[in-house]
Image (cartoon, rainbow, N blue to C red; front, top):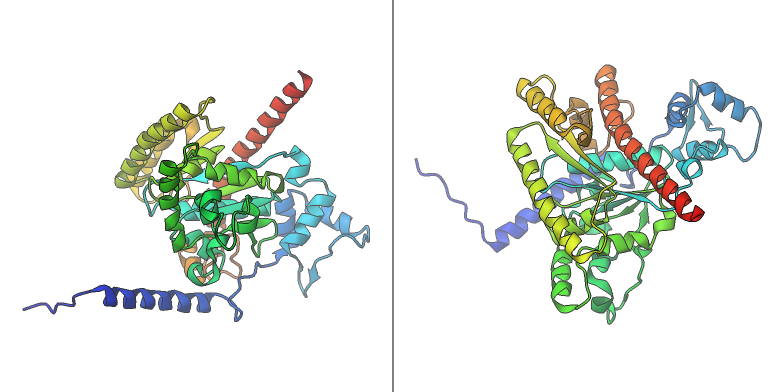
Length: 408
């Protein structure tokens, strides 16, 4: 039997690209409301109390003060519901916002990186950013992957809803390349930042045009004598440093100029790696190449590069698979303090809510097992809480250094 051949020239491939876009548009229309804008659900009083780490009685006490400046939530027949902004207002009144508790002077930058795709890098980054926002941290999520999966998770169509000025591209181009353009060089990342439907969580989006960023960085490396190719991300974040407590960066799955710049900007590095030999082989390659990258940093910088924390994260973990159990145990034992002790589970809950363009923190009225949903949420929280502890440790260490410098 002769198989029918279907050659694919440029015209066919363009047509397939349009068809792929049509599939995404249908999925987005099915997942989002009629205006195609995502909205964050409201939270029950119990959830608000858990987020604020207080007993529900404490919230009732606050509401009992009849202070017109305090939100009372929305009453339903059986519940009282709060928006995330209202939860943050209550948190501010209790002086429990992270910025209040820790006197945060500059953001902690957490870069999620691995040079291999399919390791749950974007899932890790988006849930981590949302976790920090839930906790009241002023959070900025930066999507440096031209595939723009993180951007899509916030309900945006990267090719239709995102202008290149809303990406990191202008900062990769730099002042020389932009000086004669219509928009020019703004000198601040603020012009690329947009609000999301999550209160306290802003976004620098991405789209396919961001692929041009690596070409721009390469050209500047060769044409601008004093240009340091790995500094633009750190410099851009510094331009908005007083606005955020935490910055979470999702990187492309490659050793690119942009990924290198994100690694240089990082105070903390999180490396997702599934408990599978082929994936862990890529993690080993990542660490080997990371050594080369840091050596490049150290040759150019007076102060050697050091991360405040580095964590390998066992991702997409299936505890029922014996091989994964064994490899995960090796990972945790060998990496010890440099490994998140709790793995990120691969659950049917996350797989089921994915087509609805929701994360575990956004899902409500889950149709499956409530116990399964609870386990999935506990897994994500356990991972993010450990990373939060590292962030708090970094903030406290900075405060101690600042105190010593002030005393001196």
